[in-house]
Image (cartoon, rainbow, N blue to C red):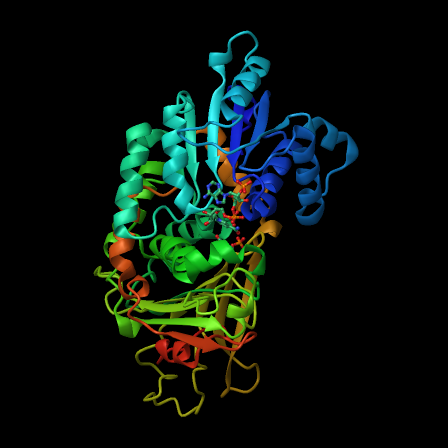
Length: 480
Ligand SMILES: NC(=O)C1=CN([C@@H]2O[C@H](COP(=O)(O)OP(=O)(O)OC[C@H]3O[C@@H](n4cnc5c(N)ncnc54)[C@H](OP(=O)(O)O)[C@@H]3O)[C@@H](O)[C@H]2O)C=CC1
Ligand SMILES: O=C1O[C@H](COP(=O)(O)O)[C@@H](O)[C@H](O)[C@H]1O
């Protein structure tokens, strides 16, 4: 990890500073960066919001969120950290900049050591997608775009049309090189291991295709509820919140052709090319669901048709992946929480253990016995299952697992938001999405987004609607 001590003094403006994302992910990441000495030598964080808060109110808010979500602040380091927090009230729009312009000017006076224009600005839009365009326009209108990078949360647009409109607005104000579109699943350590495993190991690299892989599964069930962010969630739903964002980007990481290099442009190009090869989803390839009781949540309309679950079967139209289903599934209030990428390997076509084999052992190859699995959650892990002969039996085969936990492999695994915010501060764009890759997402989303598939009910604590199980036939889901 590069020390960002050499980066210029920075004022980091966090729009949506009172929200769920800020509380659970961005503020904890910032605190961790401070503790690991990975922030610029001089910095301030200005929270921005429509409500009226003093700097001290905001500090209390941040402290309470760190107490809740960690890392737990200790008194000394907290004092030092909290002195750098400010809040700019009364929103920020083209017509009314609220307190933000003045707050940024003050921060730059304090940080710039006599030269406020030496201070770099980072604007982080942790607000709902509907606020992306107006906030970007306001940055341009009030001159805060100068010397700045801008960071968008996902989803970047909610349809092909809104993607184009947002992309145009953003490029009117910003050059592409200053734009960082976050998809934090790309920042997970285990997602990056997909590349290492495949390109640094002949065994796996040579098996990474339709001749060896029966199905690719990207499975992110969550036991999590949505009650804390019901208003946002009901406008968004699982397709936009997870499928066409995180799950598609991870699918592109699996499906990509070898990039020319591991440099940021080549990797982003390979990912974008993979998305271009996604075949648009048809109605038969998509199951949407809503958990029973969802409509009883405060802020959810009684007749809401928002999906809290989606499963999709996608094909990637490249020679490498022809006819291999990429199965994706995610939902709230499900039976278990996981974030797994699984390559279910094909059984041998022939040979003594094959059903038509002549070994006479009678041993059957266990279903889904040879599987490569990446656990994206936490610090990440890789696991491989193999069919072995039960010692001494000479006839029975059973499946055994071996696992590597990434935190045992040395190094310093960082949570994705810590890694990505650090990359923004030092200007490394390799783990961020590009407009060419994102535009194709809207074509590939097809029937998942066009409302042609019904929303089926499922029981909280289950694996989603029954019909989602059938999508995975004949291989079946590796989880559940
Ligand atoms: N929560 C999560 O786990 C994740 C969220 N994201 C993305 O982060 C973004 C924010 O999500 P989240 O924090 O959950 O959402 P919230 O609903 O919690 O909204 C964040 C904050 O944005 C402000 N806000 C709300 N509406 C508007 C508006 N129309 N104009 C300006 N500001 C507004 C509010 O602050 P105030 O009232 O003070 O102005 C609110 O507290 C979304 O794009 C989401 O997709 C991405 C990954 C994970
Ligand atoms: O972006 C989102 O991601 C989280 C899951 O990711 P995690 O890394 O925080 O576990 C998901 O719960 C949320 O709905 C979504 O907005």
